[in-house]
Image (cartoon, rainbow, N blue to C red; front, side, top):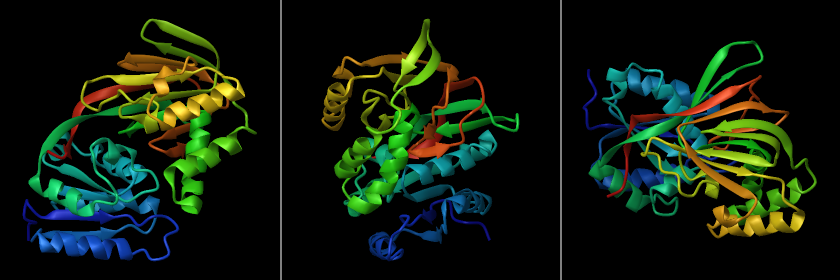
Length: 311
């Protein structure tokens, strides 16, 4: 029997380390059912199960897929959706209810983890926007040509380390600001520069760089002017500042004025070519990936996903 086109397929991704994995869902279930929304829910066991469950929802005919999770879960869902033919993908609308360690992309649209009622009301109104995706194309250690899509950003260098630590410290401290501050303090004792060679528009950057953020979205504050609907990527390249300047940069990041720091060099482009980034870790939407081998490219693909946004 075919699924009604208005029925939601909900993928619930409990927070890693949560003691009661169903408590949040029980609250959302009450809000959804109070609005007479028809839905079916599946729950992920771990990050590896997200793609499998999204594929199952697609194959079973769901046209509205709501991810209850964070940036990484949404990234998995998008990459799964992008494996489908365009005609299939164009019939599906993706939505998000924030429930992750980091919910940067949801927050960009005004979705708040503490306002489930408001979020569900917005999703029910079904305002759809076609949005862009960034794409990183690279070669892995086995010599295979690979690619991965991203909604928010790709980090290269120290911030990829920080994002990895932040995911761990957020579970410990709970607060986004405290977790970021503690991660930064730990990173003071780590390597803070990487030899990179980058091509951005007509510019060639060939020097030591602390971190690079390529944003299709706000990039955890590092590409605050980026929007996922203008066909371009925003890039912030941060040269290696002194410790005092690093603390100043952290404060500007927290207060939303990151681009004002004199060590930050912003660009806007359709493509970034990373010709070399020795031993620099790479993070995609807050999750570490295996470091690409050799040169890799980042581009933007315009209006490829249907996404539910607030009014």
